[in-house]
Image (cartoon, rainbow, N blue to C red):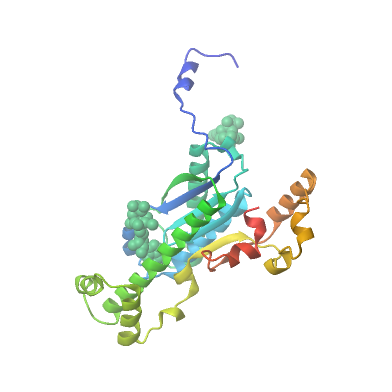
Length: 278
Ligand code: ATP
Ligand code: ATP
Ligand code: MG
Ligand code: MG
Ligand code: MG
Ligand code: MG
């Protein structure tokens, strides 16, 4: 097509290619969900239906974008991890973030009636913001994931205790807040147990740990992969051919997508699934 005299305005666009060879995390977060909770009658502190909608939407996003290697969700947020070798949209931040946020939102709205059959969506409709951050090392990425899961734990222990004081203890919000001011985790566990006979450890895993979405593949026993003798340790690393790598990637991208509530702070999860970060 011939250039028009208007074409120059394209030069105003700013490049936003994310740094190569880094892990990209796109996190979406519900807009004003504190109000949405009241609007749509979410149970406090944890509405299982609302978490199920989040998880269904996240699963759809992972299915739609095979470049996503793992996702982690808690509350009204979800983090999607793109492999450091990912070249989707030439790694342009605005394209990646807007595509993931709108795919997530569209699926959230689509899945809603499955979990809230008696509560149709109306205004305000749920919407999600998004941002992208690059993490240069696997350690940085693991620390990011650990940060979100630790946050989940801290908030859930607080919220569980707070709402027990309100719903079971008859305190008003201000009194509950005051009771919890300056308390440590052990104090909250103690309040839950001594006042309400609630053992925090027995709370559902989905509330305590959040949700991890990934492609299910054969588990690896990390022990059997450790090099046991010196010969192994000195051996050249076995180079897989490019086609072999491509085939592996293809097979993995077809694997079943699962939602689980596992500890992703400790090494076990990652050691048993080395393909997630390989
Ligand atoms: P912003 O637009 O800045 O994100 P927000 O009101 O969404 O504002 P957040 O910090 O994202 O603020 O907090 C989300 C709120 O929604 C929290 O209060 C959280 O407890 C609540 N929430 C999210 N999911 C659930 C759920 N499944 N059940 C009960 N409450 C939930
Ligand atoms: P990308 O994901 O890169 O945007 P795309 O297929 O959406 O890929 P666009 O350049 O955005 O590519 O082009 C949109 C296409 O959809 C065009 O071919 C356009 O003619 C077609 N299209 C959009 N709206 C309509 C419409 N209302 N009626 C008919 N065709 C439409
Ligand atoms: Mg926010
Ligand atoms: Mg929010
Ligand atoms: Mg949030
Ligand atoms: Mg288009």
